[in-house]
Image (cartoon, rainbow, N blue to C red):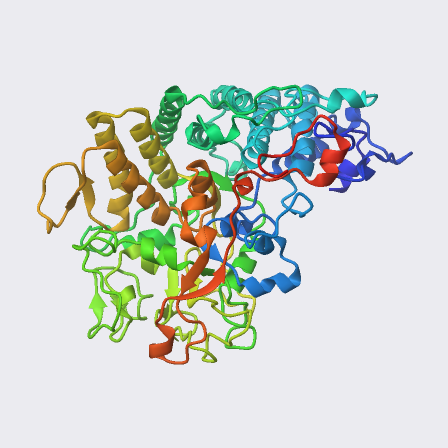
Length: 635
């Protein structure tokens, strides 16, 4: 933003001496320079200043890309390994070539301190401008928005790097003493405690929704409570709660940066925060997005797909934390889930899903494929069309048909979320009005870097009629950082961990089942039921059994939404997952016929190191600040 180049502001250098850049932004521009009074005496500049603070919100449509990369660090989305030739560094990272010298254009370390400092300056200097239709009530609201955003950025830094240099509510003067800014890391829990207080306090001063359409996307009380709940869930989880890995991880002055004493109350706080969010959201009119069949039953296929294409104003009240900046990055998402550039509709069709995610989806009776009662069959081909009650027509192109005759059995009789998430060989390609053909050198596999490397492409969030060749994209699609379905599963997990008793497990199942009803699969119960009961599945009344089903549900409900990376980190589970630590499987990319293609085949091998749970501090920043210690296990 040009305006900000002219503002005589020294952005924070909390993490090192002129950290993060060459400090060109400190250069003055005589004669054209704006001073603080000028900025906050003009409504346009005030709004620009607020927009700058907001600009740090991460674009959820870029989560899979090299710029941020949360998705490909997990085991949901798998990009073509051969895209490395265009210097996509996060693809390189997952194959083990990650050091403190490796760049990351997510730019949190460099960018967030500037946003945080500007949020403080705004709160200190913004004032009512009645003559420009900027009343005190609006200024107060803006300041509260900045207060939340400052805490949000602090938390995102801590979630990425662990303990960080942390000096809240501090504005460095223009004649700063460099030594005051060269501080070491601060214990993780103290950062969480600060952000917790800020987010909760701010939630009490902001509305739950806005009636003015132009304010959609501005911070609400629900957004504050949503991020607070997710933060406390992360902080209560095994990575940060009593983790013996970090017992010797200390500052240079000997300060311990992670508490290695397990604290059960962290789970209680997380459960309370999640429930507070849900209660206040539902009271304000937020609800799960559900579409119905003509007979009044839930249409799980339409519900799970259309949620990602239906705006708030069109009835999608599931969105708790909207993102309203540019949608242009979604065009890239669509582009890379489409077919090879030399083929029918253009695009670079190398963004797929792991075989592990394919296997994670339940069968249509709600059981995992490993359950002997699931009815799952892997090999062979179906002998008839399978139909269900739905208005969805993207199974075979015919209304209500889910799979065609001759479909590989692995993909038959699966739950609705599977079909709205995964494009497999023989699934319907709506834009082309034909089935996908992923055999080698066939229509949708040019056997290049721009082709489904393991026989799958991602379908979730892909609008079926977007056309890369003509540049025709769904406009104004909704984007978000948090939705109510995620809040239900956050609460379910926290409640089960907070209280090891039957009442808590019943509460957990209540919210897991809300998700399963929308997804069109049977609900769980601890009651004894027949294995063929049409409505319920028995689960043991134990904390471990409930933990397992909560994690399975998160795996499929929230996949490809940028959350899996955080989940496998906070559970300390990444190093136990085969597709994160070793061979990755799919169908045979080189297969030219059914016998060759439908074989579980390792298409790449990933590398995992314990250091990867936290990002490293870039080596240049370490050299600028003598008080910094590197992230755990990176030395």
